[in-house]
Image (tube, rainbow, N blue to C red; front, side, top):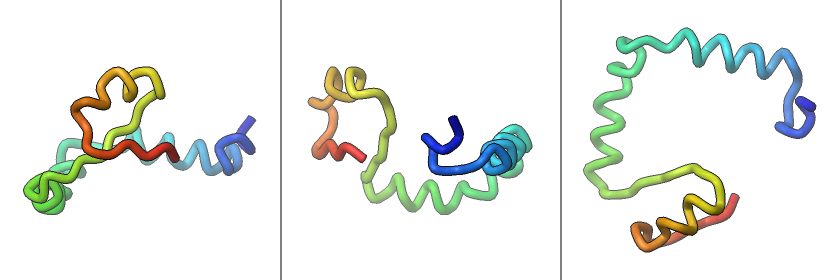
Length: 65
C-alpha cells in the first residue's frame, strides 16, 4: 500500500514520528515565515474534490494536483 503514496513503510513511519513530534515551539519557529506568506494574501488549501468544489467561490484558482 505504501507504493500508492510513492514511498516505503519506513518513509511513512519517519513522517509519522516527525508529525507527532511537533510541538508548539516547533510551530512558533515558523511564525515569521507563515506571517510573510499570509501577508501576501496567497493561500493554499488541500481537500477532497467535493469540499473544494463546494467552496470554489472563495478561491481565485483551483489546481488539481
